[in-house]
Length: 475
Image (cartoon, rainbow, N blue to C red; front, side, top):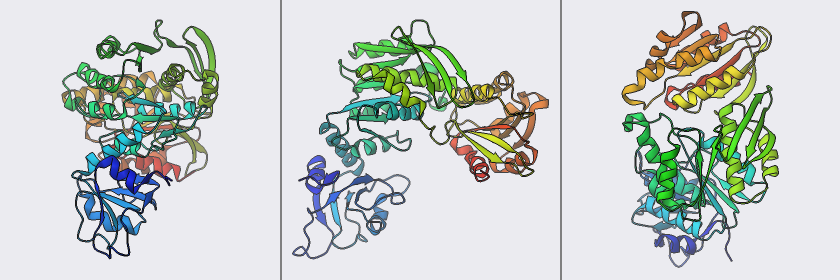
């Protein structure tokens, strides 16, 4: 009888690995007798009873075997038996641990009979994943990563963690370079794939946005003709994406957006300070629903979610109710009230999870749609955007028009590249500029007043999240 997520025999059969232990008395210990509740690649977050996978990145995971067992690992997936591995510690030895993790992922996929949904796109992957988690949960058990695990380690890890009885699996698939999505989509083999949008991101590694679209279209390579592709109808690269889906044999394609021809079309959007009030046409049917995540970009993401629900023949009404009760993920639009040093309160809009021109524009639109209380102002705290290549300076400076359009009253910027925006922004808007985000905090707090709305956005490396943490500490 199977206990937990993986037994020793199941894991060995999946990977072709050898069950053994380093040292110990073989008469008193049988390597095969273990069962694991989960899979982990990080000893800092490993939970008792999980398999620790010793991946090699900037550090070799084999250096942490002893720590993994001290944390309660059930077993370790290794390419060798480290000398400091505890005696009798159960090991599963494979030639390559990343390939071993991928083998576990394939086995998890093949033993599960649920529907798998893959999500990629320049922005909106995690928000869409969370919307899908909520919407699909109205019809069964949903498996999805708690964090943005969308790379060559995160996707197989998420799949290897999928319980056999899951009704649905939702997987983010990201990329920085051409060719990275292909092995991941073939691993997931999605029944439904969503491309949220195609926009300037990682331009340091691509010569054009069209090349980015081609890279996103790799997601179709893991699909079967019976699979469904869900595409952004408003995007200028929609024809290319549709063509690539058709070329691999995908016959069912749905579109979403504001375009009059979209299958799932946004017809109205209004934010009342608590909910986004949305009207839409879903395959010609007029509906209205609430969304707890503000911003028109999130309304568009919700349409892609409803397209998935439709594609796998679930209840749209139940899904729309679920979207009204969804809590935004950290760094993706969450709103929090915090106290000011001199008294009064301000509102924090936490958009701090990463940034590129498209997501920055969406965050500024959200700020512009948010009405400050009393004599409050709209405050933008922005960190630099990275991996944008030769156009980086122009893309930063180009945000100035969006600041004005959003009615931003005060601007605070951090990072060398943000000097371009500082120079392009109206003088009356300039609050402060600093090489590091931490250098903005004191001045920002000193100048905030009751009713202000503060939106914070920047690439992860800009560390604007430090300001978020400091302001949330005042709640």
